[in-house]
Amino acid sequence: MKRIVLLVTVLALACASASAQGMLGRLKERAKNAVENNIGNKVEEGINSVFNKNKNQNQEQEAAKPANPQEAAEGEEAVGETVDFAAIQAKSDFKRGGTVFFNDELKGEQLGEFPSKWDLLSGSEVEVVNIKGVNAIKMEGGRIQPLMEEKYYLPEEFTIEFDVLSQPALEGSSWDATLDIVLKAEDGYNAFDIRTSVETHTLNNPSGGYYGIGWGWGAYNPNGDKIDGEPGTAAIAKVFKKNDWNHIAISFNKRAFKMYLNYERIVNIPNMKQPRSWYMEGDSDSNKGVYVTNIVMAKGAVELYDRNATDYSSAVEKAIVETGKFVTNNILFETGKATLKPESMEEIQKVADYMKKNPSARFEVQGHTDNSGSDKVNDPLSQERAEAVVKALEGLGVDPFNLRPVGKGSHEPVADNGTEAGRAQNRRVEFIKK
Image (tube, rainbow, N blue to C red; front, side, top):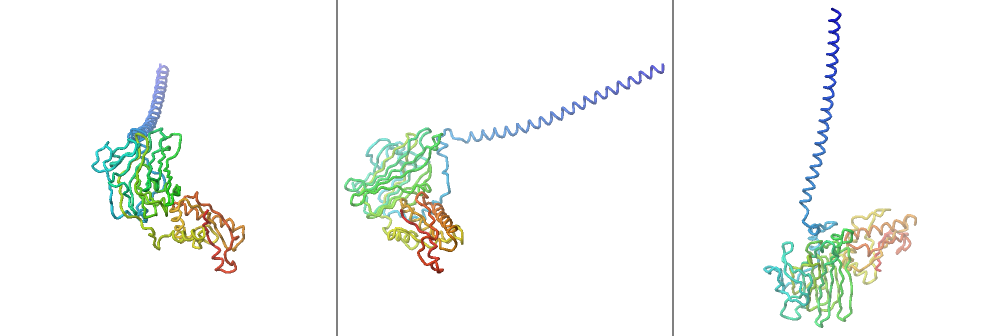
């Protein structure tokens, strides 16, 4: 009996132990699952958090986008360096004539109507609109001139100014926005005409293209001979404002004609036929366009020879006229290097000013050394120095297309290399007009 009781007790203990172990195992399994589930939940929460954050950011970005692609194009900012227009205006030689005889800010004009101070010469798609908060003449397709009492109203000295805005065409359109300005002589022939073209393919063509502004002009001297030209693209690209108002200014004094874009002089003609009247003609996409406002005509102009001692270009101009080249020993480099010294920039600025006022001028920029050292060192050094000067000019707004750097080494001395004074003369930079 005792054996039976003992056996039952042992079996009971064994079963209890097995049950406990089984329960413990189940508890461990549950704990493991709980931990795994908790980690999984945390991971899932983290993923959801990131997903929801991105989703919210995307929703905010979508909400911030304009209703159509064209509005996005209009909102684009110009790409490139920041231009200090106030500084450009401060050093510009343009001065409005002293007596204003025509001024049209288009204030009080009825929207959708033809501008009251203008006459229509051809076309019909001209009306007053409000664009960017400003009343302006929309030049979709028409030729207009100021409404004046006299047929020939431009005096011997005058200035003309206006603001122009050229916006991109509709998406998929390759139609450029153009504005023609034509100044007429008393004999009925053109004295000056300029065609500006604002090209908008980059903003509207998904396959690529470009956005830029083109200028082409023609002028006639008093003998009736025509002069053609095109301002330097680099100078224009630097000061042209995309999808914004650009200020155009014209000055004529007896024979000298000058034209400015945002106060940067881009056309300079010393002897031109006298203009007596003018008109403008616009052509653009039907839903965008060319807009003109703040038109001012005044009697008086930039003085014929309004140059002072600080006009850096005078020495360059004098040398170019007399010899066809500008030679300077004032562009200095660190010894044995192509690194420009800071004091060299004043001399380089003279050349930059000349080239921006004469955008069709082209130069071969020659670097010359003395005979200290071997040709193996001096030849590549002179080339590198010429390239450094070209790079500095480009940084000042000169179109590098008009510059070709050439290293001459010590092969073309202009003085005796046996003296320090002679070697100093041989270390020079020459700008040879081509």
